[in-house]
Image (cartoon, rainbow, N blue to C red; front, side, top):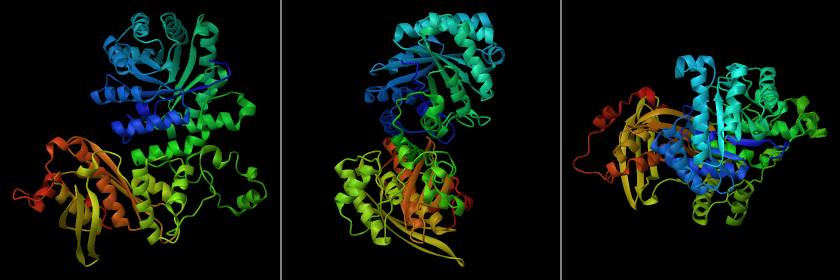
Length: 539
């Protein structure tokens, strides 16, 4: 690799995905992996193969699917971990085993209960073992920023001597400052005699808000790989945000003078996909990809922008895949214009999915005067389910609610599945609560509502409402999103999105969902789920 090029190692699917609220299904991981490949990352850390059968299968499937990017599996410095990683990577065009061992005295004493010499011998043995299993090995000295500098040099030298071509210096708990990171990298470069045979990598957490600054400090000191995640998701306060690191290099090329392979125009799409999969949107003021990143309300700012955009924008929205000028579509727009707009927004769907999206677009256009890019993005991410067999999914056919401040709300919901309609009526303290209760009565599979939110996609009174739900059953947590100009409909659609994922996971144990003589009473359904009125929104 050129000394002037920085590689991007993306761990969204490993470190990012293991953070609370960000778990993904296999299909979702495959979608994200393909987008990361489109984004141009150099390495995709697809998972921790030994951690679970699900993680192993994720790494295996991603290895088969991704052909132009290195696919990596994490492993502890243990033979059984390395064996699992190697097996999961068998189908990869460019595999890498990433093995790690903690090296700080704090971790050695209290976590591993191991001496420095024992740790050094384990590094030697396990890096060599991994190298015999895979042509490309990365070694991480966990908690490197709090490791004795002399011992860290010995460990890194041993790792390289035994086959590591990448050596990672993690600031595992986000403790270091930029000057300390630079000093650590300089120390390794000047004191490790075989460092010319390996690439130095940075993996920095954001506990003190310094992940990006510390990553760039490491790069300036000579590190040539940065480990990061889309939107900075990850353990505790997260990781260095990929989009912030790369746009720092791009925007201040005069300062850094470094090259990279990231297609920055794909950043917006990658962030939107992550948000769609996880149901968690970036904070509005999040740099690069937040909703307000290119918004200007101050009169002084607006005046300056009208004269020269560079007065208040140091990068263009287009450079990160944010389309500032919106093409407005309406109910008279044709399929071709809609399909072209999808492509412009970065979506390349098969014909059958475009047909479904166009139907959803037309319904939305009938309710709104104009449909903006943000409306189309919301529809593209939520309107058509992506998991399971369509014949076994529930779709919303119709609903009627009655609600008021002096009455209990009632909801009559009709769902379609496999060409048949199923109908139930339910009561609740609000129309959304009643509607979701009716859905639960139809599907005959108890679940609890863990989280619910709704927000406007666009402005004005006819804005689309985007609902997000998180439900739980005995097997796991499932997220769903739905959009509509009617917030009750959006909520039902979000619930169905999550329900379909849940039923897809539990299909072997679920009947047809049709009404039968063994149907439980409504109160039994609710008691079985542990529902309370406080769990559901009242409007």
